[in-house]
Length: 85
Image 1 (tube, rainbow, N blue to C red):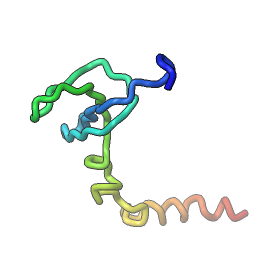
Image 2: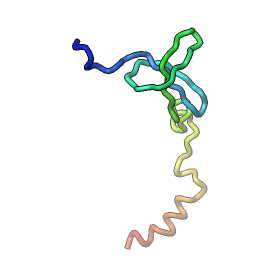
Image 3: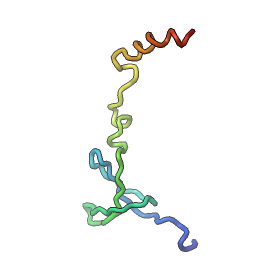
Image 4: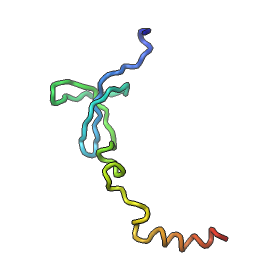
């Protein structure tokens, strides 16, 4: 392999800022901060807004469009007739 042309591929700690969930994986992501892990390792820290631990789709808290209290039917009643013309 040539020197100086490959990205810095190393272990990085990703942290979900909404619930402080952390996971470690290998990545080339650029980071400015470091974090001390429970096992004593010091790893680069990449902060995320959402992960599978906090996203409504993966946690099962996402609401279906059909369960929105009649809003879909109200929209169809109001605008469905004008679109059909």
